Length: 106
Image (cartoon, rainbow, N blue to C red; front, side, top):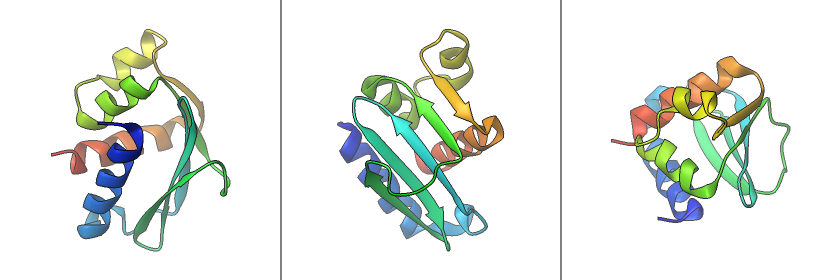
């Protein structure tokens, strides 16, 4: 699955069952082969190409590793420790994003 497909599927799942994100008001940036942002705002999630919003946390990794991360087949701690995943900004927010991925990737 491509990054765009993965993000679209994830957004559909979250917006279809938003209980886990009701209190979130945060934007994440994904520096992959292209730049994407994921914004949680007012109980919904939006995905955009480019940088339309101000992100509090940026994740840098390859497209393949991002898809694996969302699917749960890449351990984020190991990826971070081995340099496959780099995080800029609020590390605590990155952990929250992983929790959301885990909740909605099933």
